[in-house]
Image (cartoon, rainbow, N blue to C red; front, side, top):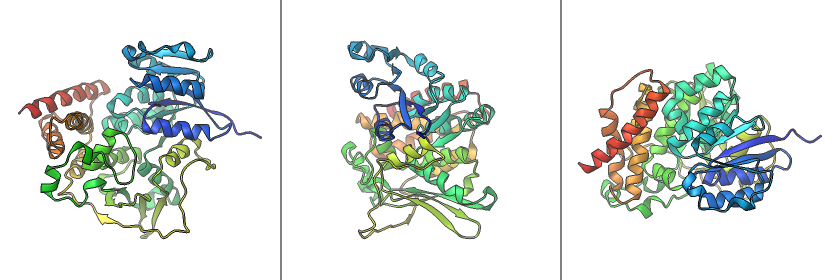
Length: 387
């Protein structure tokens, strides 16, 4: 008997996660079908993907970019939609079973939120949804009976390892970090870092923004906040360790001292596939460990002085409320300024801390308030940089 077909909406199909997801879908046989593909401005690639994967809908979020492409080659049974409102609407479609939210940054919140409201299973690659609105999103998911399945390699590893015991037996989770390209840099070396230096990640091939986040270790700070809400943890139940090989994707430590880890080569296709086919494990295109070769696994304590973003993440996880949304927006804006050559690498985290300190903290904000603070924090980064 053929397994039941799962229809997947891939939000952000032209990005790194989206492209990997389409490889997983293509290799799945009759298990997975790309029903919705969306992109913001990379509409040429979106059209190519539509011709190859023949989705039911394609969404070009930026109408101006959509207007520059001839869509007449689209399959006759494929509908073109444009604008952000169309994205929030199409995830509600009856043909959609799982929504893979792979849009980078706070822009992914609206589509994820709409999918949760519609009761769709969420394969979450957009960590910013939980960083910005963790309590609101997880509460809504419980009300709608929605499963949020992690796609981040670290959170997928935790999700898998947590199945080895009961929640009452958990001592802590341990998020692994590659350390990025600068884990052994001195303050003087960090001050001289160029954009090209920061984009040269030693183990992962990712988009520009998340690669910079890895270099500052802000990605781990955001993952601390995400884990706090995704797994209903206390901040002191979350630790970080540097693991340069990126083979152990994270670990769970139990009260008896046992540590359960998930290992695999650094290939996002594995956590993507696990989220899309859960609770089943099936063959797929992800890279495999080569146990005929010598393997070296190293672990080092995280250096909070060299990478102060880690402390910001813990502070935001402890405070909750509006802090995650402000930190995330400030970081997105600061990273954009660094990539544009407007600020040095070493100004990214201090800028985020300054904006976080200036905001009026609210312990139980509404979604509308979080969106407003997102815009405010981005403007404050510009002000901070001008000074």
